Image 1: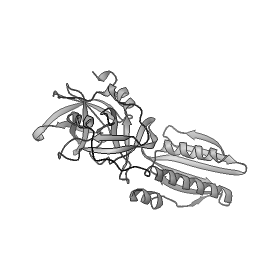
Image 2: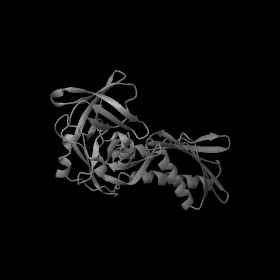
Image 3: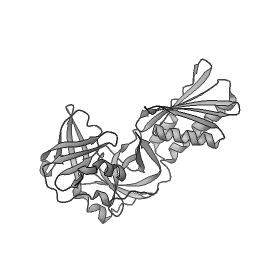
Image 4: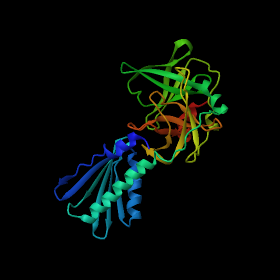
Length: 312
């Protein structure tokens, strides 16, 4: 279990009780998407015998009203970030049973977060040859966004010069380059960008020697399956990161994400991720801030949907 996760659930929880009229409220922050928090809380309450009604706004804010006999609990859940949620637990100040239920639900949520980081086997140092063979299809990208340089990765999907990467951090983009051999920068053009799927398609005037075959990728992953992220090679070392698929998936802006145990460090966004046979399984989106190895991948289905008719 990482120390950052322990810190997050024991120190960073905003457990500050407040009184608002006749209602006692407790607010806590959890490093899981709001949709995942809503699903967990709803299922937990129903398993405990509560009848749960649910309303969700277009902004992703949910209100759960749970009743069991004379117990009446209100749970408010809203996004704190795309990958984090604030949960507000409310009940009558003098309601002992409701407080006991809320404490149990909070403990279950904290335990659930911890399980996302536990039970991961050590990863091997050997990288499959099928993965090594794909390294030449991975590119280093550099963009100028509002006057500041942003570095990230991408991968070739067409040898005629089409590259896929992530879309975040590109608001207000001025220009974009592919970093070639010897530090040469090749100008690129963003021809398609989707902030919901968080994917960008970039065109450069360069013919590449190899490309990732997207339609031959793998759509379904198993919990515990080993995966390999190939980052762009800036320092000619440590370009492949090994990870493991977590038990749970996440949903952000209506899009499914794979959760993985992997070091998705800064600059890794846009890196392709493969299974041991070298089949594309997703694109590195990022990691939950405050954690070391809780990463998120955009799955193959989203990539295929994004490319659509753009893929040749």
